[in-house]
Image 1 (cartoon, helix red, strand yellow):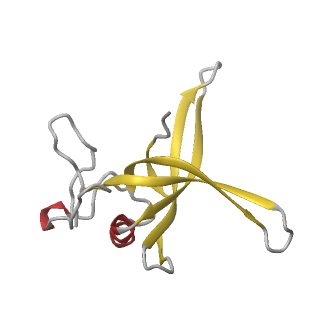
Image 2 (cartoon, one colour; image 1 turned 90 degrees about the vertical axis):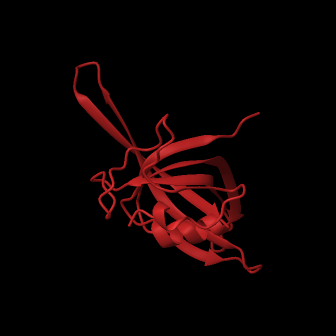
Image 3 (cartoon, rainbow, N blue to C red; image 1 turned 45 degrees about the vertical axis):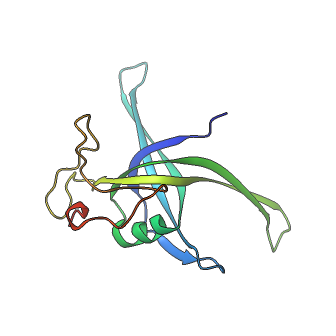
Amino acid sequence: MVNKVILVGNLGRDPEVRSTPSGQQVASFTMATERRWKDKNGQRQKETEWHNIVVWGKQAEIAGQYLTKGKQIFLEGRLQTRSWDDRQTGEKKYRTEVVCDNFQMLGTRGGDFEGGQQGSGASSSGSQSGPSYDEGGFGEPEDDDIPF
């Protein structure tokens, strides 16, 4: 069985970073993706989908430090649905989130980092427009990896 999500989109707000009672960092933010197509009449259509993103651990710290509203990122993760009882109504509530396993900064809406690098994503030659962070064995980004 597979539960895999891959998204490329723009942050809808700056990440909100918190700590759990055990001290683990968690960041949350929204991300917008777009779908464009031509309808049967040849008219261009656009649909924006909003996603709730959750990032844990060291990645949460990095997200809080480097990600800002409007930044374009590539992320991989999994879907998770949480449920809870509303304190006032007692009604069962649900929220589906993407739990991020790793992300890569691609650029901003204009396509450029503040430092002037063009954000084009990963290519087959292995060059990347921004640092990539994943759960397994990552360390601090090198100074050369930081896009500004």
